[in-house]
Length: 529
Image 1 (cartoon, rainbow, N blue to C red):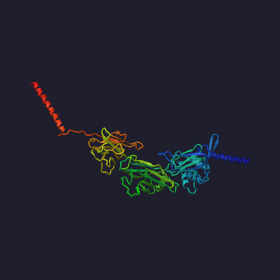
Image 2: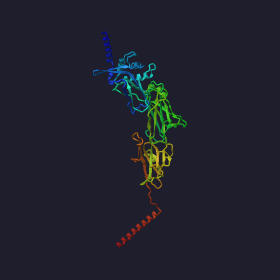
Image 3: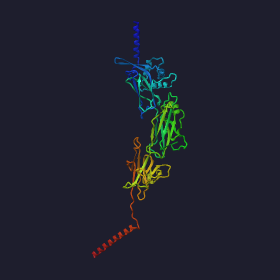
């Protein structure tokens, strides 16, 4: 009888344990099969789309999950992971959340404490997840190892699948994010997806001009945010920038050129929000590559580590480039972020492009009513109708043989057509114009042809989409589908002159007319007599 009582007592204790299990987790839990579960981890939904390339996903199983069924009711029990450091990490995170637990607390007490953190906006449970992660990454006396890891992901993808998982309550952490924002999920045979809350480090490059003239100075701004370097002994955060052939680094908005032997270019680093107080000294110069003065690198590693109190805060890097004669419609340059906690295994982001197109003015100067190209027509270009009318402030150019580029330093304001340009359907080319309105004035016609009497209005319109080549050009309001401005000249007519054959002819005709009148007068007089 006593033995039976002991057995019943054990059974009753077991039933009570199940009853005390945290059933409120039931919306995330279903029937499980140990070691056969899968979990798909998706990147945070953002624009532009996040990428897992170069990231490592760590899973920490905080609780084991078991299930029992009583009629139509399912009961769930959570037991703390017995691996080294897990209970200590839970105590630390729950204590910071204001919960009273100790290393000696029962499993159900830990589970109940986590359940109590559930709130409407999720801030309490998110803080718990982040605090656990911080402890796991930084505590050296009670080290917490990840239950499983993806290892470094080496290809571009927006999701990653774990398989062979035990049922459990998991914390999902992605290394090297902008900030610690771990995700929590109960994994079973029905619940097998989690969306990350954190984002990988990234940068965005913008320009203060969307279209440029040759000679313009462009202000470039790279925007990033302080990454979370918690738990890393070292962390690299380097911005790389490579200019195209049509751009040159300069030191300021005035276009102050670099010295020929320069190894540095000036930059300005600042937090985007005025109220943020930065720590440490931000670099004021970026390093130029030894093999090219169009490549620079800005190492912000020490600065971002010094500003961990500002993790997640946005900052800007400002620098300048001048548009040169090699600029084209597809003009662009890009910045790329290199980051990671291992200098030998850093990750580079997809380059962020800033497009600053410049446009050509292609002219087909030809004989009216013919496809014969005319050489020797001279033009000047103006940015306003008033200037075109008065001949003031023409655009300066350099070049010859029908090929010219905008050049603010030049003294030349006239460009001239040629008989032909090899392989081209036009015979006059001016490169380096920003989108906008222009007025083309013919200053001298080819020999034997009449000069245009009025300016021609030229309108260059940049692409309305991301495809830069979808730009348009029009002449006096009519679009040129081939992007070539046709200009025709008429041959001059021979006007009458004095003292020549024309004068003799006119005199003879006049004499005949006078004679005719006289004869008619005499006849009429005789009739009347």
